[in-house]
Amino acid sequence: MPAAPLIIATRNSHKTSEIRQIVGASFQVLDANDFPDFPQVDETGTTFLENATLKAEAISSRIDGYVLSDDSGLEVDALHGAPGVWSSSYGGEEGNHASNNARLLEEMKNVGAENRSARFVCTMVIARDGKALTNFRGTCEGRILPTAAGCGGFGYDPLFAPQGHELSFAELGADIKNQLSHRARALAQVLEWLKQQSF
Image (tube, rainbow, N blue to C red):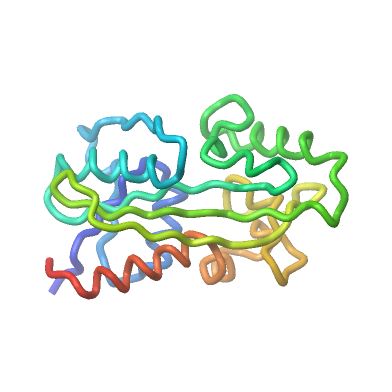
C-alpha cells in the first residue's frame, strides 16, 4: 500500500527536504512546488502560529487531505526576540540568507559571549478543508556564534550552535540537526497526531 500523501504548505525546498528526511517512508511528502496553481499566501501574521495557520488554511481549501504548514525562525534574547517572524527577511530581502546572516552578525558584534543565547522556534499547523485542526511547537535552545561556521543546512544554521554543542548546525550536518532541531521536535508531535487519524 503506497504511503499516504502529506502536503507541506511551502515552496521552500530546503524546508521540504528536511521534513522529508525526518518523516522517512511514513508519508509521501509533497509541497506547493508540486501544485503550480497553489496561491502564494501572504504571511501577514505577527506570530509563528498566525502565519502557519494562514498558510495551512489557504492551501487545504484547495486540495483534499491533510495539509501541514510550518512557520519558523530565530529568536535572539539580546535582540529582544528578533528576528522572530521576520527571520527570512531580516536582511532586507526575503529569503536572502547571506543578507540575513550579515545583519545578525552586525547586530550582535558588541554582545558578549555570556549574552548570546537564542533559540530556533517552529510552529506547525495541520489543516483540512480550509480549517486548522491542531498545532504543535518545537524549540531548540542554543547560542549565536561570533562568526559563521560550516556550509551545511540553510538560513541561520552557520551562526547557531545548539545547546550542548560547540559546532554550528551547518557543521554538525543533517543527521544530527534532524535529531535536535526545532522542526524535528515539532514534527515528532505531528507524526504522533497523524498516527491517530484516518486517511
